[in-house]
Length: 180
Image (cartoon, rainbow, N blue to C red; front, top):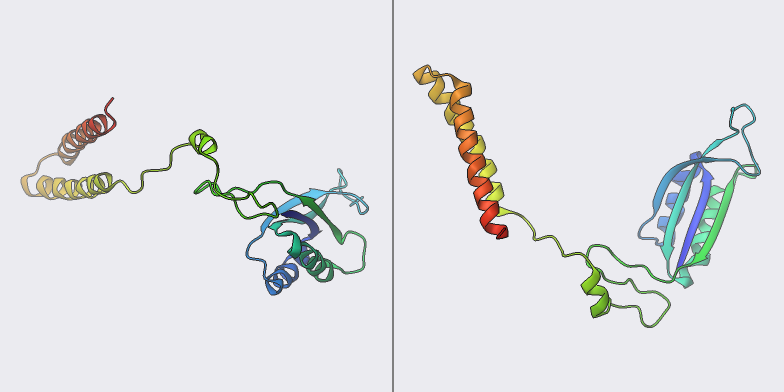
């Protein structure tokens, strides 16, 4: 795999994005950067010029087409058009599922058992009981308002007692769920 990094004029981003989409690039990372090289802003105290940085991870056979698309779309012919750099990439691994993305090496696949044991545990998913407790909290507050209006009780007292009971129930549920 290759990592293509391009520093282009900020006004050229839309044209470059369109060119990359036409080449079939599924994703890019874009960030605003400041710096100077061949072109410097001598009217600024630090000479910095605002540019846009684009980073793309792609298969080896796509790299030349990507570079050419960027070069054609970003070129104005003036100083400060930017640069494009291509670097080899040994490994790209998706954080979500610890899957190694295909690269030019034949051994690119799922991580080994040793690598998987070092990775952090995956999230357990949606907390259904926690969602229901949130709904119950909202319902309890509505009931506290109704009761306080109908019986002329102090609303804050009714709501506080209800919230404390709910907080205790959530704490007890978390304690028993984690087993600590």
